[in-house]
Length: 469
View: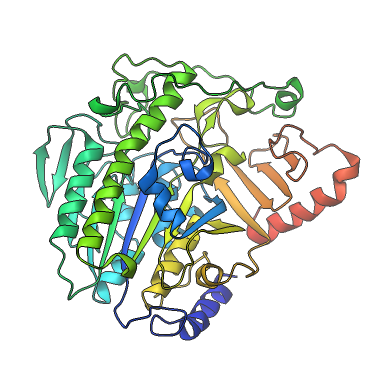
């Protein structure tokens, strides 16, 4: 399947090269700005229908480009998901399978990422923000400009690695990341295309907004979520309870203990409100990027992508501020893209797309042939034509982490209408959901005789995706 996808990508590159009619209207290679937030579930943006959120600059990406209504990650966890965005591969192929720090820093120095391939083809490349594949914050191969920090980093006055020099910053990390990226844009030399990654710590816990935004949305309220008894009855693994160990007991696993919440409270209205407040700083930075690109007259020759590394359960199924599960609020993400030479403004796509599709898409738009096959599929045909047939099913997976023992490893297959979740350990009951009539995944049909034919079909799909399992 991977080789077939690779051959298809090569053919598409010939048909849809940057110098062709569907590609750029000029011979310049496109610049790329890839913006990724942390733990942002779908539904927090104004363009996604959120009536509270004030995100005009993020929304502009989608209004002048495309909004993917059904974008998903193939592992709902920071490190593996970010690696999948960069490599176009599943975690079981790129080997960054969880957030445990041991060995991941070494692996991430060897990855064949799309920025690395672009740099080898003549691009100037830059990384600003959260790397989070191991504790190590040293420069990874493929980046001319490097600004990062160890592990999760800090919202307030964090210590960073700026061009291989460790510096104590003063200020709010989202603003600092935006400022560094903006400087890169302002100093950009038009004679060379660039690819820039802006990887925010926001909106990860502890969700500390900038001082200027602490009182934003003073009357913020979220609708309550009623959890049906039938919902929990069909999820015995979700109801498991384990005593959490002290942080010092997780030797050589966690990058660092979490930053303080600084007394901001943990009630749902406050926490979700702080997600919105943290997003405001992200949005302001994107507004600055737009202005810099317009000032240099390179906006329309710049691909802008906005995504999150995974979603979150924020009350669904009785779980709050937690990821790692196979349910849609966790694996579904916002995905917006702007690039006028290929994408019509005010576009939407309902087809299922994945984080592993970003790498082959950006390489194709840049006219670069991937050096190795990828699990992902280029979205270029879909960007051009709304009626392009999308994938019918995909695999998503989660691997065991020492820091999260309550959530056991699983693999899941999702189609447009169904989802099958298979837990890896023996004796753990699977789950089956009819998403078309039960989008909230409240009714586990795995023991429903009328659904047997769908269960068997999804089990066969699982074997195709995971031959050994």
